[in-house]
Length: 433
Image (tube, rainbow, N blue to C red; front, side, top):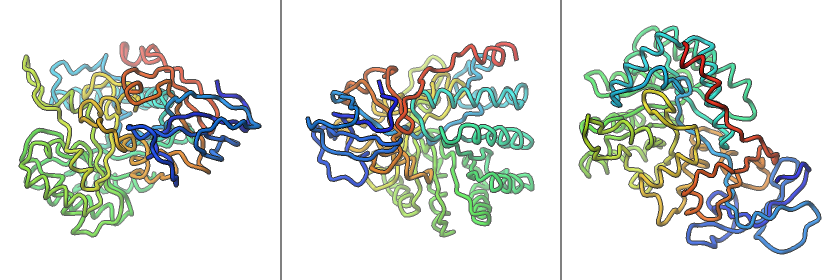
């Protein structure tokens, strides 16, 4: 569909106005869409104009109101865990059993080739679906860190510039109080990664959080935490991290993922925590598909709550919010395909992001790009690379009602092959390990 030429126009494209940089366009639909013409020259966006019937000298494709997005940004994933479901299923479906099953799988099977092939499978899926940047948390206890982070670096170099990859260390916070934890912080600094970990309530949590902040400050690292991934109203790690941020006057980027327990706490406590989060300039990433799968699961019982944090209240107070894939086909989530459109679609349904949609589409594009420190991505603007997704849908109801498997993905204005990798590629890993 897209011509193999240096200069062409995409005419009559329906684009969310909130994703157009430095524009004065006015939304033309109740969903915030605007009909524009985009000129692509040498892989970049050269002009953006209101749609018109004016003839142009360059080749032109009439999109007939098809929706155009920038490429997606996947802020929180676990590529190293992915696609082990067939060999290590979570037959209880609980969070605790997921932890145990994943640990055993790592002990039994995680060698360089196994990790490399599964991680790259996930990257291939992301690329075909139209993702431009991925942040992945990497299990980093002991020798696993050296192995998995080494695989990550190899893949990071191989896939640049097709996909920007970022790595976050994943351990429980008490690990950083050991010499091994200090060595891990040094390793993360060496590879240009992000210091991260799982924060959970325990008698030493304040000292553990404080220690991580000191390690990050000494090495100039950003932070990314797993926080309060449960339905316990007494789980207040998000509150404590925000307090510690202010105490240390921390100026780096901080992202907290999950934050599920915030949704079951008293309103006064919620307001206080959100205010602290805003003051501390912490970004929040919600993982609704995985948390819907794990939270409130009991044998032979219907789940009651959705496991999603207070995204509306956080956004209303000006807190940066993103949604992301999290786990794919592993003990923590038995499904998924690294498709951020599916993430957005399910987030809309689970968290009621519709009527109106407002600027919620920024949560899988522009906002996560900013939180990852790559502000040229996740938006459409003059001078930016023509990294775009063209959907067959013309309105949000159409976009979110079908998988959009016939989407067209452009990298620097060139149409890429969107064929997904076949599951058979991993058969010898997951069936004959």
